[in-house]
Image 1 (cartoon, rainbow, N blue to C red):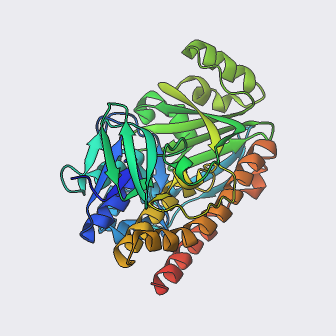
Image 2 (image 1 turned 90 degrees about the vertical axis):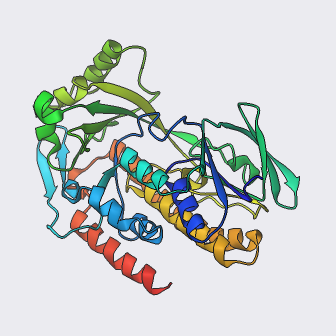
Amino acid sequence: MPAPITIIGAGPGGLLTARVLQQHGVEVAVYDTDTAVDARDAGGSLDLHADSGQIAMADAGLLTEFLALSRPESQAGRRLDHHGTVHGEFTPADDDTAAPEIDRGELRSLLAGSLAPGTIRWGRKLVRAAPLGDGAHRLEFADGSTTETELVIGADGTWSRVRPLVTDARPRYTGVSFLDVRYDDADTRHPAVAELTGLGQMFAGDGDGHGVILQRNGNGQVRGYLVVRGDGIPARDEATVKRFLLDEFSQWADVFRPALTGWDGAVERPIHVLPAPLTWSHTPGATLLGDAAHVMAPFGGFGANLALLDGAELAHAIAAEPTIDDAITRYEATMLPRAGGLAVGANEALQEFVTSADPENAPDHEAEHRQYEEAAAAYRATR
């Protein structure tokens, strides 16, 4: 029999929703386009904030496991200008766990491994979700299979196939593209990049549409984002891309050259965002979480954190409320305004980075960490 609750998307938010639902004894199925949890490169490192992502992991009974895998030392950060001058550095205290880093692939594997066998239906790409009435939906997949469900949860990211059930809002291109690059065995093979990155992450911008962001990952890897404003990055071949970068960053100091040309792999990621703040009218039997609901610019690191917290709150609402409609209403009443305000700020921060990039206005990481911890205590006090 089809599961009464169906999640589309086996990213962190979708998987955590399923985990908390199963803890409540609620039957759930998760469908994902990928053929396995590690079928693709999941991307770089992310930090889980004490007031959101970590709360969700605790709700899922996985906080201890997360902390064991995380890298608190990678909370360190430095801010440079495009001349290579360091304008600020942050070194976390030994007991600082306000926003430790974890590789996306490790987080996904941890969450997927916590689910009952058979929960995730790999290799199933949703092509259409059709309302049947009374909140039920028929889900059609690319392989020709179908299922019906009482609640479909769109956790399927920026280009969600579930989103059209609740809103006609579509992501728009911000005019900024990131080239997601990686440097394998960085300390040995890319020592200049490793030194530039430091222990955690490094931000540099010129205020003229360019930026370099580098970040420590696990297994000796450094990941980076080379930021370009405009029509995108010509991704025809590696040599063409590197010539393009050298031309675009021609006014940058030589210290950045190894990061621009020495990478071992690259994927272009044009940055798209949904209108913010975004709201919609209640739709029986359908809702969204994470990027499907509120994809925003990556500045502030809210994306994965909100997806996890969205998932935990939605699962708790489903378990507690008498009907699915009541659960959706309760969940969206909190999720939409929270995400809307953060999305506005994140999108503005991206544009500020590529248009001004004043290193003296860099975020105060120590103050941010205190804020995460205080907000976490306040959140728990309301439960």
